[in-house]
Length: 423
Ligand code: ADP
Image (cartoon, rainbow, N blue to C red; front, side, top):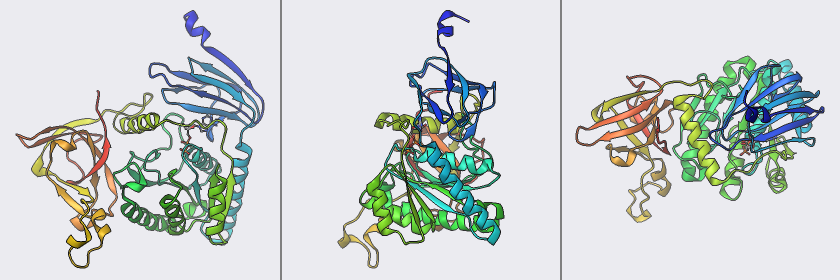
């Protein structure tokens, strides 16, 4: 090993209840973590002694220990330090309270806790959701994870909402296993982009989740963890209260913001427990660029997998006549121009057929399960393709797709999300 590499090996002895935090920005660097002795976990996923865990650009990680441990960190990080103050004990108490409710649900054949995690952006909502899900699954539970964060969600690609049955802890490099997620196409990275549609979609998702819960006893008692967007003011707040009602949540965990906590205590019915949780000092605020890079990475991983587990997407041509492309939402018309009986907001959920045009180049297209046009709006989706070329003369589209031809359905929905395939 070269001297330079040797210099980049650091050993950390962690006291019980402390964590090693590190960040990695540089795209050319990699960092490895090895647990030498003791016990440690990353956002609720236990580390195996002696195994080398790899982290790449954009990683913002905390290796936490309840009992104390020794960790080796290899490679050049941008930041690395040990923090003794963490809110983990509070998060763990939260988990314990949820476990009590699950045991009670088991005894009385009731639904387990439906928990919603809320708070402004960058307070660790996704991380807390992940910790609680990991702890639940480590106890033998099978909770459902619902991600309503259309900007930085952990299920499928950005611009979607979805549900995932959690059957094993998240892997450190790939997150939760994406086996058969239930995904709905929304098409924008902000819930305010089309509130009416967002509303309809999570209402539909809630109905599907209800069915799923009723049909699976283990999931029924394990309950649900719902992650939300950081949109908490004005219309965003109203949306949160509406989500709580639609999913019939029992518990709302409010991260970091006392104002939001107080508003929810005031506005929620009494049977909903609203709990304030401090944010971790380790949560890193992300710039607009970092968010957009994270979205890009998410889409890249959808097609190419992770550095550790790469997959090879397919590229194929398809005739325009073989697919039907739609966009949800039409330009608004003034009230005076609307047909009788139509409301102004109806244009937001109008399904409009599109002729392929250069404007859709690099865009993602959702493959809808809809069998008929009137099912498009509320059908879930099979997956996504990306338009990598468009030949207007020969009327041919080239798609990047995780699956080879043929597509599972020829009804495709245009997303705002774009992906530049640099491979
Ligand atoms: P939110 O969902 O509220 O936007 P996230 O849970 O995505 O916030 O957290 C933001 C970033 O902070 C993520 O990259 C996450 O990995 C990182 N992070 C969370 N907790 C810690 C911690 N204790 N130490 C270091 N980084 C953390």
